[in-house]
Length: 92
Image (cartoon, rainbow, N blue to C red):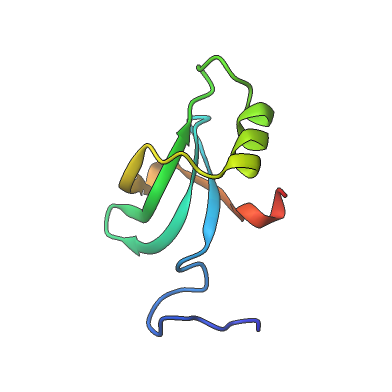
């Protein structure tokens, strides 16, 4: 149902697992909670760092196969880091 929000008072992405592309090149995979003063609060977040050993495509394929390996229980992605946001389901 378009526009349906499970918890009234929250935005459409509340509780949805998303991929946030950071302007730094990092990508954040986790549950969108809500916009806050400093950025966007997410829960159970895995952080992909492009400086790591594995390319994004491999990291994403492993995440889709085995699930999110959270690096942070709660994380605020700062406003100046926010880039495009897509639902994880769009990748799989």
